Image 1: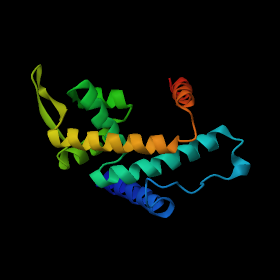
Image 2: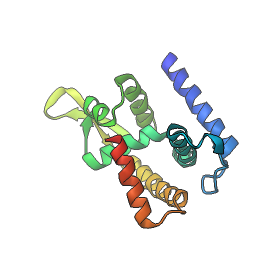
Image 3: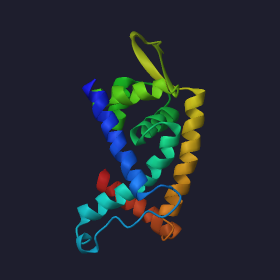
Length: 170
């Protein structure tokens, strides 16, 4: 119950930020950064992430899910059915958080738990037809937002930027 309240509180806080800073995800987000603090890499990365997350979440919220759940749908769509432990490892998400995200997706009818044919004690997670449609729609909308977000970059710069970010992460 406490975890559900915390999740709801986080969702409300993010929704408040979305409404305050960005009522329309396809319009430009106000400048969230202080130019005097932009000399710090961590500050710039944090503010850039926030700016993009606000835009993306405004779109995903229409489908009833949040960013990590979009990641779950993406992995299940690309990799096929996985059990909860495998999915948690792929997402780098702890078990408790994973359960909340999965329960939310299941309640929306976007995923389902099915028996694992190789282990009758285990359940596999699969994307439903409704989930696939929601994921595809959200992916298209996210691509538009990302393209708009990076509109000041050339295609070559976008590819280079993605590679540099991956280098920092991996």
